Length: 301
Image (cartoon, rainbow, N blue to C red; front, side, top):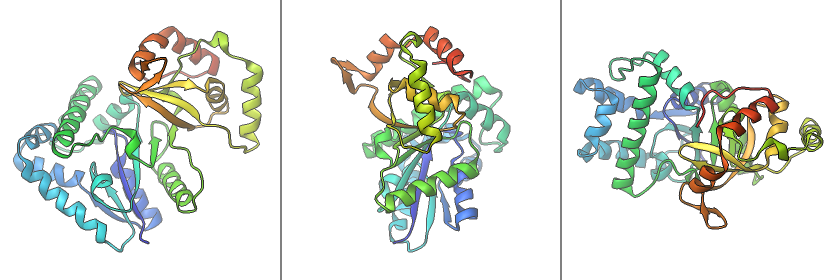
């Protein structure tokens, strides 16, 4: 069976670059809808953000792109697809969602010089426009297809690119794809310590337990994934603070995680993910967590 890997995710997470790595390093053919959209925006003399707003009421552009995606289901080539909707349209795929710290994403995009279709002034402006573009895109896809592209349950792998190179990301994707083909268990999410926020006070932390997990990780043992909650675009630790701390202390770039709830989904005791986070997370816990694990967050929720 042909390899079909779809790659989508947060704006600025490196989707196109990673797909190019999959092409160059693993000889996968590349299909990109982003380049098509940017070309259309330039031809129309508008920004990509304005194009996304325009597409909300002009479905003919989506239909053009969708038709090209559907054809890929019959492809016999090994392909990497850089597309928001390929996971939905293309059959028999390994679906990857790339996530990233919003500040790092804005820094990457501002320095990327993508041409006249982008038009970002500075980091703060980029963050604002990226959020607006993400909302616009998701609104369009929900309205047109009835699917939520930001729902991580739609994907085989959620991978954080905040601190790792595109080459490393490509290697992880292929490794996880191979594990699925061999029916091996795999982490559902691989997240950066810089994008995981605590909901527990460090007063409840046992250094002895952290040391135990450090020893297990160093010995190559597979430990239980950290359970996380997704709320307002950020990941929070629900269970597994000691395990997460061990990965932080060992300088590991990614932590194996499993999502248990997001947004309005119930967590426990009748609380939704959003309400749980509102009640359990506070900046003081994040500052203490930083001091405990000797790092600094790039962005605070």
